[in-house]
Amino acid sequence: MRKGKGKGGISNLIISVLWLLGTLGVLLAVFQASGATSIEEGMQIAKDKASYYAECIPSGECGLASIIENLGDNSEGGSVSEGGSVSDGETIDESTEEHNPEEILVNNETPGYRGPSEGEPYVAESGMISKDYSISILENIKKTEKYQEVDYSRSEWKHWSGTEGRSCWNTRDEILYRDAVPGTLVFINKSMEETDNYEEACAIGRPVEENGKIMIDTEKSGLWIDPYSGTEITSSSNVDIDHIIPLSYAAKNGGQDWSEEKKEEFANDPENLLATSAKENRSKGDKGPSEYIPPYKSYRCQYAKSFTFISNKYNLNITNDDYEALKDILNSCSN
Image (cartoon, rainbow, N blue to C red):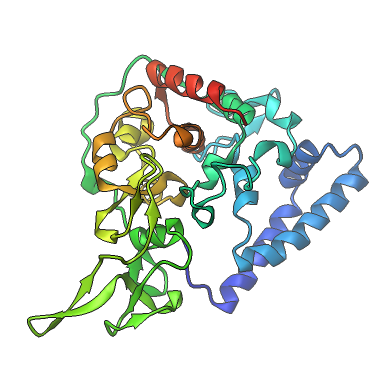
């Protein structure tokens, strides 16, 4: 999700990245990911990456790099010790060290992964992970016999948070924008006037007058391709923003005791969100993969990859039934 950044914020971000890349922990990660064989080689790779991130972070072009950085990680922040174990006793998949970045992600020119500009559904970056790497992640996730019994309340998971610097634009708007076929959206600015400027947008639709008041007409306001059914949608009112891992599922699989801040982070994480048809989203409900898989066969692999990645990212459990369902889907994928 785009956020407004001042010059000072960008500078601080670049400085932080450069500093982080200079730490021993990141240098070790560079050695593992790149196969460096000497300190000098590792330092040069780290220096090159520092320059790369210094340019691409302010421009917002580091999305795929962030996926590679997060793979195999869990957001609880356990520290890694010798032997590939984390501080809470769980183990991480040491096989990740054998992969190069180009082996981790599916080429975005591959059919099914090309996105709305090519007449296909949007694929979250979490859904771009390769078959083999996704399977290795899946094996690392904790499995349980059944869901936990928790006192779940959707209101505790604040979603559709506002966008920094834009009081009238929130997470839902941003996902609608991200997942739409490029060039099809119609925006309304804060003065309730039609605009083609994304930076000025406050809503998606056209202004119409009804009974002396300016209203938002969402018909023919854009074009979306439902990833779960493959159907086209032309009204933003008929689009739901789906949590790939439903909020209640997360609550029943390790997330109920999270802080308010972490629940909000999860509920608004773009990697866990897709613009889908209202009908299909409600059919899915809070089901896991053993109870729901997209009827659109061309998107099942992308769905399973995202579900697996997000589960690992947030250190969630999955049931044995969901594990088997995800494994079956991933094994059927061609890449």
